[in-house]
Image (spheres, rainbow, N blue to C red):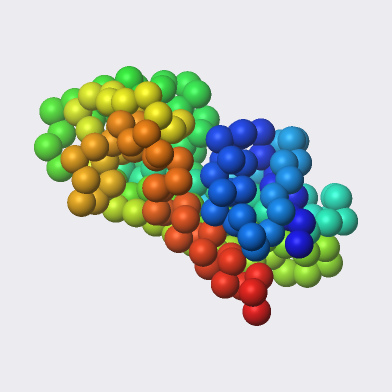
Length: 181
């Protein structure tokens, strides 16, 4: 089975190929999918994958992920990518200066849609904390400031972080379960 993954992010493509190996062939559809403004990653993924599947007439997957920081009332959340581009990791850490409660949740919503069918969304999340400084050079996005629960290292400090991200892996395992039905 071939899945077209609508994303500009080659790092995500590499992750998806690794996790879906033996189940589905992942091919990058290197275009910006229509992303709506919504309150949840699930809504963004569902609407985006539906529009992309309609446009191309093929089975499409998309992924919307976000970092939801407790002390910032869930910010940057569904706006993680544009906020990261605007203020970067240093900007997030500046917002967290003097904050001792550093809990956060990384969430992934993987949208799947066959042409003419209702979109499905598979969710994964991982609780953790925000580091006090940028640590490590591995991974991408917020990886150098997110410490997954049970670890002392950020994803950025883990050499194989791209394949250890449990929030995204959990969502993809749910997709795999659906594909095997």
